[in-house]
Image (tube, rainbow, N blue to C red; front, side):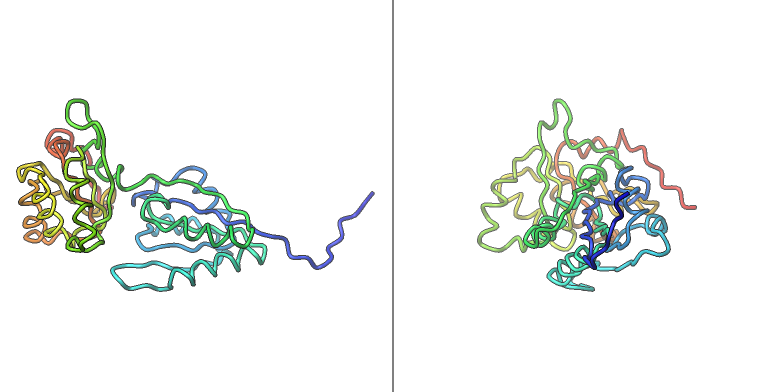
Length: 260
């Protein structure tokens, strides 16, 4: 019988880009959870629930690489390098990201680093907060008679940049506009949308810490939502939904956070 001989060649590992979902731990996919439970190395972002991290096996290496409001534990090139090096050393690596890794998650950049080295990877999509968080507030992003489409944009960019003017003209009349990471710039964003032609009385909702026990929702209008968010000191992370569908929150709000 032939025997397997190890000539000192390190087997190549594999990277798994896994979406953790929008916040509530059990909203991760079944495949994502299985990979998390068996990984040798897990690099994880901010806002990953502790209950999810507790699923990682005790022998696995856990590395926090989160970024929040300009405070970066590691730079993106450093994160890319870590993933590449661990895969090269033969490890099964899970890169765990909140929401879906391809929705403002920079997942593509990390996979390009692996592809450049000829290393294997797999993408495990996650439930995006852009759709799930409004759903937990009773807000469908599309609804017959109210919205036939939606757009998801980042609120990180400075709304006053010259190149952003066409940006707001383009999105001002999208039936449902979902803005991620936009609390800081919300006064400027709403101002630019109104200047671009969106009616000031358009329903708008801001949802904080969606899908978690700390979820809060503020329902207002496009011209008043920024003031209400500031007045009520709405915590981040928060998602803003602008469009007629936001008003459905009053009828369809179903989620009652249960603090254990």
